Image (cartoon, rainbow, N blue to C red; front, side, top):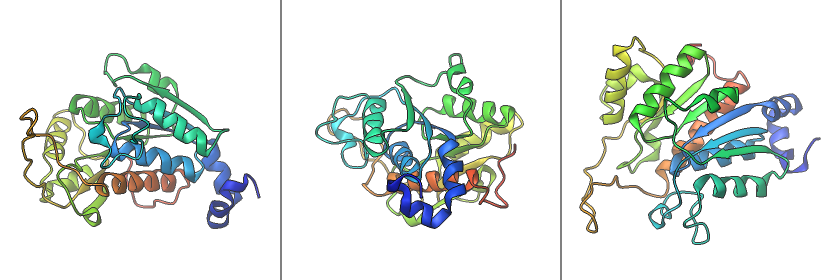
Length: 245
């Protein structure tokens, strides 16, 4: 067997699959409750090359759901915290981070990295739309996470085609994505969404803003599903799933 810490994974997948994952290049955009869990799951699955992108720092309000958030990491760049965590698991991994926004006018760094798969766990709609368009035009496999805030039941998370989200999932982000992408001729693409109608947000007592509510287990569950789907795709174990390549 190869690296001993992946011995149990090798027993499940075999040495050839493990080598495929070691050579794979996966980018994760957004390192919050969803993206942080996805990045760690990919690392523990044996993905050898990862690019992590997030502009934010860890805040005390992240402690309830984000795997990167501890009392010791508050105030750290999320990319820095993620890299330290991944290297503590796999010291020989080829992991890099970019503490920045994904801007349409300044995104060449991502595509120059030549990812085999991209996980979108960012919040900004304009960035998500541009990323979706670019990946379809460049034939890069992309899995987009839609809304997980204000949800309580992780068993209602699904992965499917963007068009399927029109069937009553109640996700405002999905509705905007469908509308804007349809205008540009993009009708299909793989997304993670919830069948659970979002609960009504409660205004914060401190600033009056309607921040989305969250719980410890829904965003990480979404991240694990994203990571699993990425690994299945990289190992050619996702028959029938449309990536529109």
